[in-house]
Length: 98
Image 1 (cartoon, helix red, strand yellow):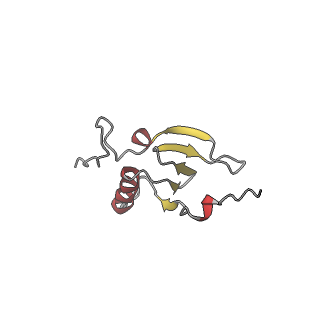
Image 2: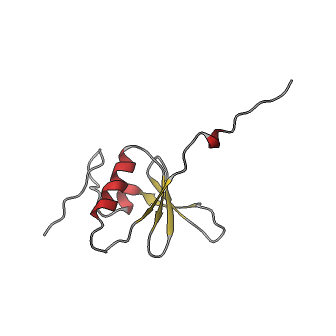
């Protein structure tokens, strides 16, 4: 009897790659896309100026190490991104004060 296993990785789409530069002007579209992915529980890769991160479907942020693995847990996305409100149960965009 043969063991016929399906390779599920061929059915699953690759996570999205996003480049976000904190402090740079005109980043609101990127921030809204990050918020939309978090609301839909989608995993994505995040590229910043210095580091590479992976945000999983549960909104936990992992940093890429020298061995090319994302195995260092940084924090939850609500604490990692400064543009997300921290004290609400749902994902909301923090209004900027002028």
